[in-house]
Length: 443
Ligand SMILES: Cc1ncc(COP(=O)(O)O)c(C=O)c1O
Image (tube, rainbow, N blue to C red; front, side, top):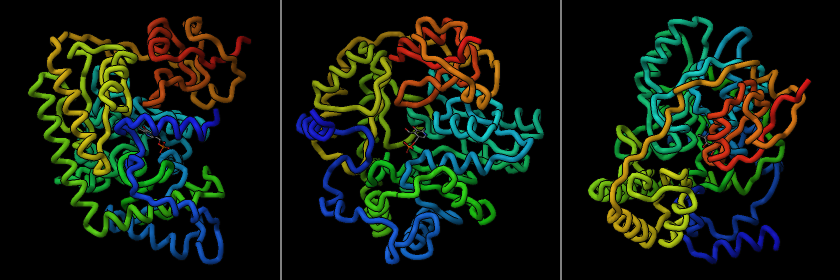
């Protein structure tokens, strides 16, 4: 069977989509968009030398997000992250980087030879947690060579860090704040504007395709100041394909039009209310979700505490309700809502919550990510450029990782290149379904 046939068959299953992309294949784009698979022509402008229509589109996004400048990416949020990391680079300067960074940030730092100062999020799970402003301040105080602070907010589970306080601290120390806002492009269109750029971040990488009606790969780099915007395009082009997809870029164009028309804002506000009702129902049924400030459109259910643990059991349960989640980690199920979910989709989640709510609550205890940070043996760059070999994860304790090892999603490394793998991490990797890992070759 070809991939094409496989995808068609998958669609025939009729699951409600609570995963990316945000358009949910709901008909927001009509089939004719494929006829726009053009290239850089005199009439169609050029992404990295934009002077015409692409520049106009970028200006529309800049108005929507209130940025000094916004730059289109057809290479996902990864490209925006790479450009942010390049912006943060300065000879001798350091980056304070939240340890739950996506692998795209880690890879960019490795390639650019940046050795980060890791900042551990407050939280009890592997990929989750918020960054505590006090921790940022402590690190900035201790290390004057830090020039940039890089954090991920919202987390994969929807937790939002206190961006305003972190931005204030960074600016007091003359440090730029870079936010991987891959999962939060829609936050500017909630009842309360929760977008990190609005709250003071200097640059944000936003995967519009995850939560907005944009095709996979469509993203934005938003920049708060003219000074930082000056080189941003050049830094993006350093990592980008020279053939950006015009289909993806046209989908961004349709999204901008939809949001500017006012209909988009209305739809997103309605969706916020409707998801709020489901969140309330889950709470009433005793199904816990992350505490504190969270993405209003993300439903994270701790199904394990409601008696449903283990990835395959979670998947079987949600498939029985005709639901495809964004991610099940054995304990939590993560569901992404957008206005492109239908009433039927909402009904299915309601019925799943009602069924889960009949289970007996269970105590779940998981080890903290920060209990014992792994030993760092060499820099990211030294590790990724060293000769390496692939070995089974079960034999990896004691060896030094040469690559990030992460379950994807969420794409957050359990071990960083250059760190020594211990028994605990090897066990976690195996439990996350990672069978093999690249390690530094034996000399
Ligand atoms: C937190 C985070 N950052 C960055 C990325 C990369 O985004 P993209 O797939 O748009 O390149 C992802 C992808 O899942 C992500 O979850």
